[in-house]
Each structure stands twice: as C-alpha cells, then as structure tokens.
Length: 212
Image (cartoon, rainbow, N blue to C red; front, side, top):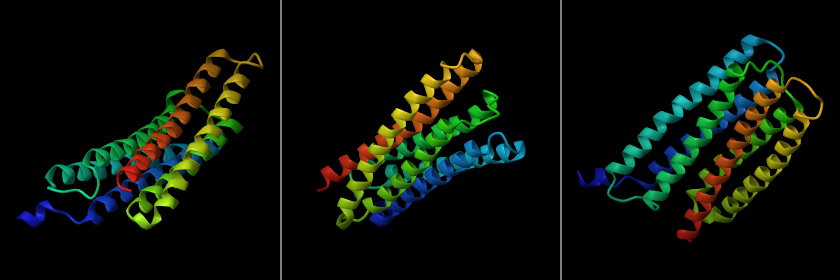
C-alpha cells in the first residue's frame, strides 16, 4: 500500500506531457480554423469541434494529474508547482477554446492577415511549450528547456506587436464599427493564448531554478 503512495517520477511527467500534447493539438486545430475562414463552413464547424474535443480530453488528463497529486506521498518536484503548471496548461487550452467558439459567437466569416499571424504564433508557442514540458523531466536538458522558455517569451512579444497593428488597422478605414469591435475582442482572445503560454513558461523556469 505504501508503494502506491509513491508513484514513479515518470508518472507525473508523462501526464504533464500528455496535457501539453493536447495543447499543441488544440493550437494546431485553431490555426487551421482561422486559416479556413472564408472557405467551407463545414470545415469551420469541424475544426471548432476539434478544438473543443482537445479541451475536453485535456480536462480528463488534468483531473488525473490532480488526483495523483492528492494521493501521492511524494512528488518529483514541488507539488504546488506541478499544480500551477497543470492550471497554466489548462488556461492555454481554455483560451484556445474561447478563440474557436468566438468564431461562431461573433459570426466571423473571414480571416485577416493579422488573425492568421496570431494563430500561427500561438501554434509556435504551444509547440515550444510542449517541448519545454517534455525536457523538464530531464535535468541534463535544463539549458534546452530554458532556451524554449525564452523563445516563448520572444513569440509573445512579437504577438503584442501584431495585436497593436491589428487593432489600429481596424479603426483606420471607417468600416463597420460593430464588426471592428468584435474583431478587436477576437484579437485579444488570441493574444490571451500567448499570455498563458508565457505564464506556463515562467512556471517552468521557476521549477528549474528551485530544482537546480
């Protein structure tokens, strides 16, 4: 019985990696969704559902991980940090879901170059976040993990610039003000994905510092 309270280090990192895999899948589906706007509406509906399914799958992984935390006598790293990183990953996926569902809620029929760039940056950041979570399990790869976290920060900074450009452009041409307001909110939802990726990267850096 006592051994059941002491899971192998691998169990925690496997669940974190599985959670971050779902983040990547959700981000890639959101990217394809944004790129598909203006084409086949059935593709759009299917991609929204794909994002939602990845979020639902991730919720099960999150639940399993938190249960493992509660039932474990020891953890490979600080249990509060494991919990924080789990919630960070959950926030990324929840916001990707918000982006996907906003397409229908705001009746967004067409994409913009800025929306596509933001979606691409989100997918890039999520891919690096996934790799950072995977390398976190191996102390010998700490520098690689740090570099990935720095890259996420750089991507988030690039997204900030795209966001400012996108919002400014919305109100330059004297178009539909209501649609401009909806697109502004959509852009900010996309930016939130990057913000949560950055938060997760900071949590990973804190874990590295504490366990160095």
